[in-house]
Amino acid sequence: MTSPHGKTNLSSIWATMAILIAAAGVVIHAGALIAGESWFVFFNAPPAVIASARAETWLAPVSGLAIAALMGMCAYYAASALGWVWRPPLLRTGLTVMAALCLVRALLLPVLAVTHPELRNTFEIVAALVWGAAGVGFASALRMSIQARRQLG
Image 1 (cartoon, rainbow, N blue to C red):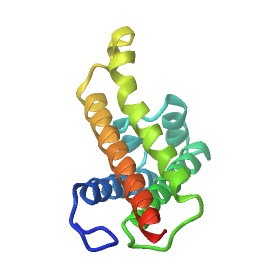
Image 2: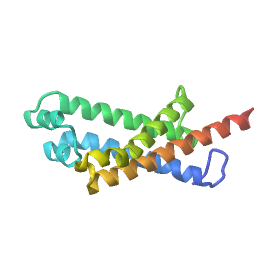
Image 3: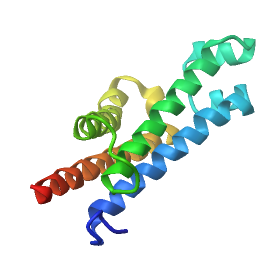
């Protein structure tokens, strides 16, 4: 992996991982619209969304598409920090928010699992690890963006 300046570094590897995680999120959330209720159940969608998928009402498809769009935006922002795509507006602000949300999501599991034993399962642990990796990746993309800006003067 190379940075926008041609250097291979750990930050670019983490940023690429964030892109891949976000892209997988796009596939999962858009795929749920095609695969149906079973995917919503498997990926622990809220009960109202599962009920919507079952009843074929608007909530499941709209929320699935909205989340897929947000995850696509996350991938785009990280790809921009790598210099792969055009720079979006508020790049550093966006990456900061993305990194913070992902890291908070990952770090909440151990705290919440103390009082919510239903969260102590393989799916939630893997999800927290994936969110944590994405958070580190977006933070790495932010770092790269800041460094690139400094080098430009």
